[in-house]
Image (tube, rainbow over all chains, first blue to last red; front, side, top):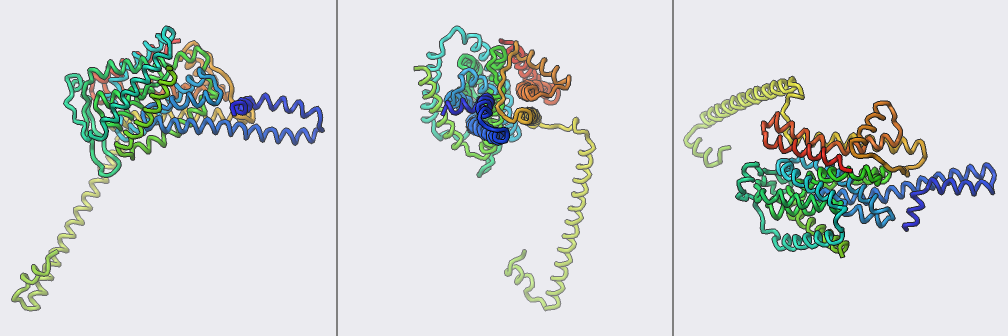
Length: 320
Length: 182
């Protein structure tokens, strides 16, 4: 399968070689006929190849927009399985996270689910963390960090699972920092019983440093660390699942952009690979954002739990 | 609507002519009430039309749009523009090579060098497929920066919220520094 895809990626080269061999044995008319057939196969191969990447990206964008994680966690392993170098895959995935964030936030901001104030406050910390993480990358080994990240996610998964559906209101008391920064908001549910959910954050003073750590992890591992961000917003700051996922979507775009510059100098950015992925994730995140608005809180939480378990196990596997 | 019992009490001990007269008076009263209501509806409709005309007369730039609406607009514009350039680049590549297997790498010192070179080429009127695809990437990467700048300006100028104005601009400065990394 991988060899087949490698051949497809080099269709132009193979076309020339095949034409050279064909022209030695057949007449001009036959050559023209084979040439037409060859072009037809090239187009079909290209469409097939593009379709696979597009469909993977569509799924990644859909899941990324729904869970607030960006989708890079799906794109990187899928591209590696298709025989693409992991460094090119990570560079393309960083661009896809920015695309998912932009596309999904456009919809969430229109519906007024994303909280811009909370996002802006936490962006300060996560970008600083991403810069620190990116500069530490060369000095630290990836394996123990992946293992630690995986274990943190697994522990959080158990905590979230135990928390269950008991939370129905989000009117936290909030500390001095929460009140000073006016970290509260409300949004209207688009599904029956069409409630208006008011919420207020708690522990904003801790949320900042934790987001810094999430940024460090993102910079070190080359991932968006959207899972950690959703957990911080949900478990620590006590926000509703929809607000957590949409605000995380808003934050990860900026974090990914902060870490993207290193790829320009490295030469790992391949627009030929990145563009179909971006087109796919934009379409997927658009569908995902339309669906999330119409989903009930409990469904969002369940979906997040499933994806979180998969990611934590993948990270532990990478770390072992 | 009165119930049957209420009507029985109302018309008790009255002749048919008197009943007809009472009913006629009631109908007249209701007709007057309907006419009044219709007049009120017309007045309110006219008031709505006048308000809509006034709103239309206000320049779009002066109308107050919510922060979320503004951010949504910035992201939508950025994503749509980059999609346009991506599709144009792919189409142009296909027309030239009869293939969609775009294969080239990008080598730049940092994000700013990439943006500068891309802007130069576009301003000189070069529209090769690679340049169009790079332009799409450039717009996509610039969009979050534009959004952060817009948030900062909106917070300061419209919401008069200096706290978040400063926070947004601080984020923009860190982001600008981070893009120098290579």
